[in-house]
Length: 176
Image (tube, rainbow, N blue to C red; front, side, top):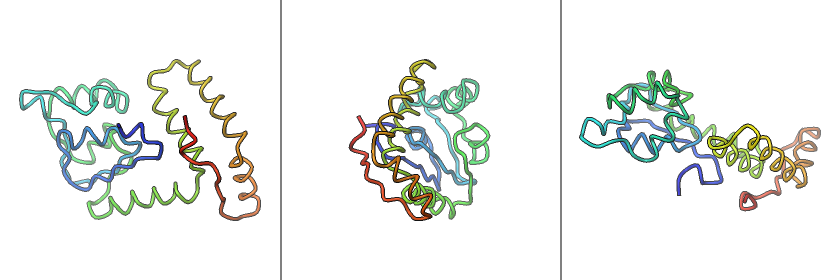
């Protein structure tokens, strides 16, 4: 199973070197936080083979064709700041701050979002890479109707109005 098939958000906290499959596996995650001073690269072309772990599918979709070509065809390494310039991650931090930052994102999601809504949103994010605009519109509408028919839509509004934490009833296992 790939990380995009997991129904819950996946966050890669990369606080050290990630070379080859160490980097390509992070591309399957929903979010990535990298250490500034670590080395990153998909170096396999420098070893007589080629990138793996779906890197030829995920990387161009994450960073665009030009940056993906530079990473996959040169096999050179780069630091966290250049990874952010490529679009591989949103945040680059000192090594010791990477894991706490990823845990804070996870805590925020776990505390402030409806699990079922996040699961549907994640599913749709990954599905859209192979869909037309019309397909996305249809899926968004379908998922929105499923969510609006469930108890979490009402609970989210009530919790907001009553200034209290929401008590979510929807479960990720309901996503199909």
